[in-house]
Amino acid sequence: MPDAPIYLDNHATTRVDPRVVEAMLPYFGEIYGNAASTGHSFGWEAKEAVDAARETIATAIGASAREVVFTSGATESNNLAIRGVAERHNRRGNRILTVQTEHRAVLDPIERLGRRGYDVVQLGVEQAGSSSAGLLDLDALRAALTEDTLLVSVMLANNEIGVIQPLAEIAAICHERGALVHCDATQAVGKMPVDVAALGVDLMSFSAHKIYGPKGVGALYVRRRSPQVRLEPQIAGGGHEGGLRSGTLNVPGIVGFARALALCLDELPREPARLAALRDRLYGGIVSELEGVTLNGPELEVGGWGLGIGEGQGSEKATTNHAPAPVSASLPPASGLQPPAFPFRLPGNLNLSFAYVDGEALLMNMGRVAVSSGSACTSANPEPSHVLRALGLSDEATRSSLRFGLGRFNTPDDIESAIAAVTQVVRRLRKLSSMA
Image 1 (cartoon, rainbow, N blue to C red):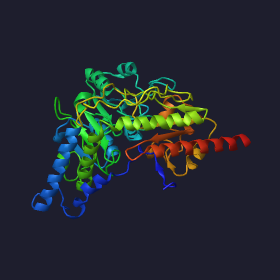
Image 2 (image 1 turned 60 degrees about the vertical axis):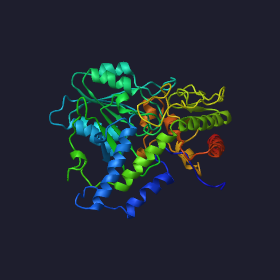
Image 3 (image 1 turned 180 degrees about the vertical axis):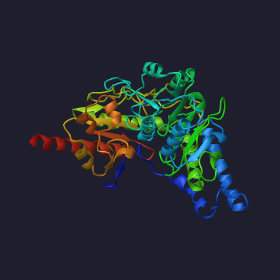
Image 4 (image 1 turned 90 degrees about the vertical axis):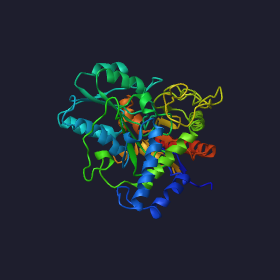
């Protein structure tokens, strides 16, 4: 269908994989018991499904099943982690560190704690123009850590510019000073190897709808070993999930979550390289047709996953000097392993600014190509992206940016159509602007 819409907003949400839907269907009609009902077979069947899903998800991230707490999504997981640590009556200290480029689901609860008297610090990142734009300055982290630091919250992979933080190094620095480490891994889990032990994190949030699973279900990893992390529950009423999160479990959603993550791990040896190749073609096609296009965030060279055609900013024509190198074929679909070289950027992420174009007009004229100007969770906020502003971009450049999120169901034909659509819209808007 030549007029079919093209979805390039996979950082906002993903289409549920038909194989995930198939796995979920029996739990809507045939196996419909409450997993907390222990007195009959309907409840037992539901609990068995939840237990199996919990084991699958835990194994995928290198955790034990007892360390996985199911929630309604990553926003709730972030709140439970941050507020759960901060509101413990015997907490270690009063200082909380985070990064300016975090998702609002992390920044907002931390800012709330700041208004209640907690000592909150937002750390800066590498600025636009650097090949590693968006990376946390580790020296600034060391300087900000004090004996009173209770928690450090750092996102693994950014939802707007795709930058991947060196979490293992960050966690080691924080643990030297006795601080707990929380990681929002919503954009990373299922898209790159993620192992909580290798990363050294104490708490980690993630969600199903970013990995071709259903909306409304997520998880929080809570370390229970060496030593056990204790949280103050945020939802009371029944003592579900080990007392950390009360409420009837979403059995179909949890089953779909586990199936979605298992499928991602099966495809992990191949999918990053495929997405990087499509992403690099999208970038190369756009900058070869248009002047005044700036790449926002780190370069596109991502540790063997991409083609290495970006240098942080500029509108040079894209070149491909070598074929995309896939993730090592020996990398099994399991946790505990890192990619061959730690990447700077998610392979399916592209964020571009278009000079001399009004960003809202650009977004509204994209027609059948679905993209966004930033996080879906802040789309109702008229302010420019806080992530791009943290990189040092002007409000004008920030407002004229588009975020492209490539995913499992995107094809080379989608990319060619998107290149043509973006080029056509930008040229038309620039012509109208010059005439005005």
